[in-house]
Length: 145
Image 1 (cartoon, rainbow, N blue to C red):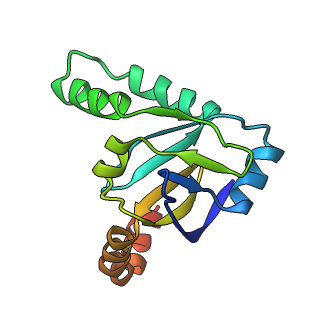
Image 2: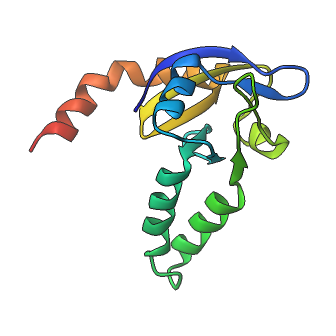
């Protein structure tokens, strides 16, 4: 659904324009609303409403009697913000999410199939630099069936 890597900037009012290809996918899939939350690896995860509900159902099925489940769900769901595109394809990211992901002005927006990740440019460059060397090794381990 969402694929590619795009560089954008946060405007003076804290808005982020999403790549035209992602907006086109949203339009084709009749997606009007997204949810953005704290992701892993110091980035933000953004899901369509349908995918968000699917993720929510998975996480709700984990017993709340497990301390790690409670901790994860608290951090994950308390960070969630409902976002809708304006007429120019921009969304407003809450300050607490930008702070979490260490986003200042420049961002990298990454399509990861069923979700979009929003990274501070510096954090993305660090992640990519540290991970690209092990990409093939990881692929071997994950695909070894």
